[in-house]
Length: 358
Image (cartoon, rainbow, N blue to C red; front, side, top):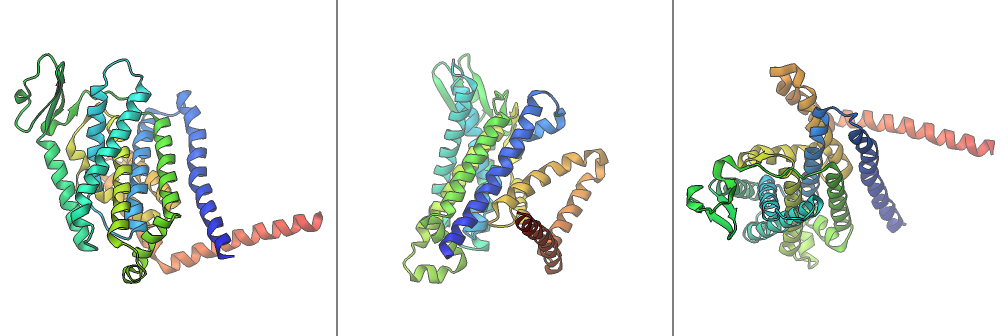
């Protein structure tokens, strides 16, 4: 009986997640092709896809593993700049979708390697200590990219930590120009690719959570001592979840980076990590459908409030506070449960009516 309940819950979560994405795509994609969406909204679609993937990946660490990571923007930046460099190295006859796929894969791999390097020394930490260390690593990554100069010419890639002149390019071009970031990026990211990446992230995370590894991860979150006492390798499973989360974040970064003609490391600072964490917390830690909805609404909200000029961020902050209070208020939860109960009663009575009529 319990097994059936678990299976139905897993199936219901899948239907909610995939259903939302497919319905949104079925509505928005034709409208986008027929130019029925204004430029302001259409320009937000790819970043929203990237941030949804980022929120899903962070939810794996914060929601299911139960560890607070504040350096997720660092993995996103590694994926973004790895993707930009990959596309710059493929300036041949390869079609744009192939370049984008290669960039996303390379971005994920590079972020995963970095996640492994960071994870080995810090994953034994927990709570505030892990949060502080991941925050520090995120800032270190940002500052390293700020000092990095990369160019390409006929002889291949050139690297320098001094200046663009130190690259000694022979009739080539600069890909990464220190604090200025990447300029003249080939914008090949598409909304269709963003939706596919969301589906991929959902597939990986949802199946991982409901696997043996996922059950071990949630056991560590619920009771670390009990999990260790039954033979669960704490370090192994925490590191696995951390690396998978980093890989998905790197893929999101590659999609995000290839949506803009110019991208700098300062975009992926501490504030970006906090923003993604806010999406996860307000959507519900461990609640993937809620995370998708929260990310979409909260990312669009500042743009929708742009007409209020100087007051828009004040309104945005007030909305965040109200949502946080509402989601954590026992009274609000009781009201929501009553409303849901009313709808359930109505649907049950309708079903009984149909049976009696039959």
